[in-house]
Image (cartoon, rainbow over all chains, first blue to last red; front, side, top):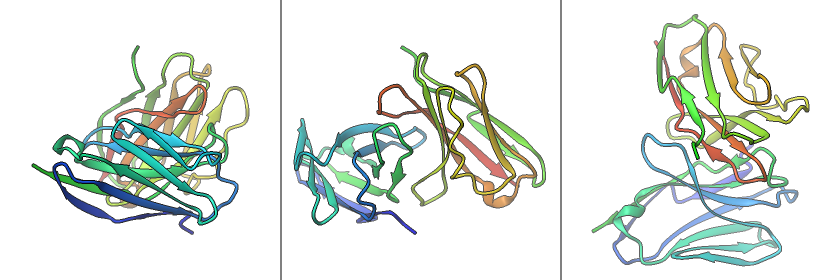
Length: 112
Length: 111
């Protein structure tokens, strides 16, 4: 079964706009929720991560919003730039050092 | 310092052949993970090594897949009798305290 569901599959945003990617999880034992950014031909790179004791975490233009009761979390990219064009993956794990369960990814295109 | 490295970057093989994929983790990282990324799919966990503990092999899709980690450092993922459905990018990651750092992957094509 798919433990982490990610949407949308693809997203097109104009430069300067806000990109929003959503994820939902099933396993309430998950307690670590990272977002990874992947450029073609490269491995995924950690963008930002959150634990369920906070509802929001912001790092620069990137914000994670977390809703524990709804078992949902989302990535917001403010002032989106063409250089943000990549595939974004949400993930979850039980304990930060455990195996990650990934969503299927969102291909983001930011038009200039 | 150096990141996670993987070799080869690309591997083309014939159905039925065995392949070995190598991962060099970041020096000092105690945990090492293998994932598989198929076209249009997310990353699928394969196996996880943590220090001297027994590896978590729960993600290996069949007994044709195996992995070892020698001396707590380099790891090799072996796929025996490769099948066309094994074609994918195989990613290795390592971590010390939670954050997993990924290598560039090995793209495996089985003809």
